[in-house]
Length: 347
Image 1: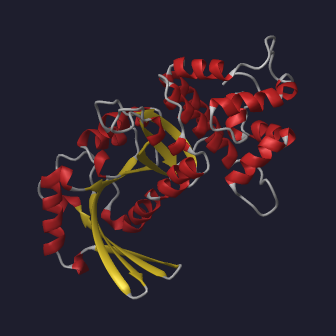
Image 2 (image 1 turned 30 degrees about the vertical axis):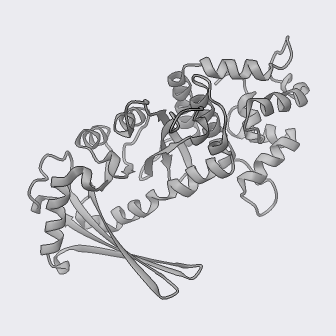
Image 3 (image 1 turned 90 degrees about the vertical axis):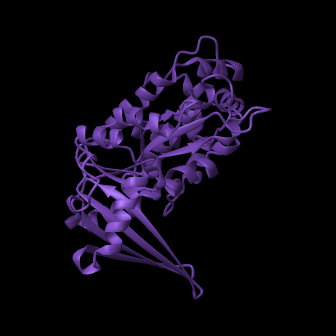
């Protein structure tokens, strides 16, 4: 009931109760409701007590069935803070979720909460354990650039492209030195250009064989170091940024690595932006016990379901419109849920 309600535009337990009460007759086609629709307090109490680890496992198992077997997918792993979960007196939100996003399919594959006294480094391995990454490229920013994480990806038969910054000082110094002293003609190269809205962005990717760089032998599966020079020109004002990466993909395949680097940022627009704008995650006031983490999983269920849903109107792929129509039209909602294999009781 909660998943249906979130698909249909509900972002609070209050709204879930209202929607389910309005559609009680429809729900009784699928569920036995001897005591009627649960109250807001019951929904909130149940989701505050469900074991988040088990709920996440159920989500991942369903997503595997939904996605099927896939290879050559870019899986972006990134974290997001749920700002609305902050209680009075707290300086920051205690809820930070690390999610795995399949860039090509635009599906959430799994997620886990970062422990309050920890950081993403401890959460990333837990997310990876949920995933079948064989034949895929896993991308992360500098927080995930750790030798143990690289080893886990290699052990799970995936490739990696990891952002490199000052948290790996010696490695960064060695790579910066190599690129500054090696002629560009001895590096593999790839370039792409984006134009639009008065902006021109040119990204040039340079690949180097990691075996030619000292101090990198400790990195599991490492085959290349990558330098990316991005130049952005807006109305004649140009800025340049340089970034570095470690990759288990050979430097001769710089085009493949470059495509993965570029697509990683799709997690911002494809996942984080949609959760904040379409699902109002940043404004969510769900705070009790496991409630915030489990409601995050509900949103991920809804995102994946709506991704495969038929358009709410001809020529539109808007998630907002799909949610709106599902709230108004239970026949459309039923079609959406059947398409996701969730028309039967039990997950």
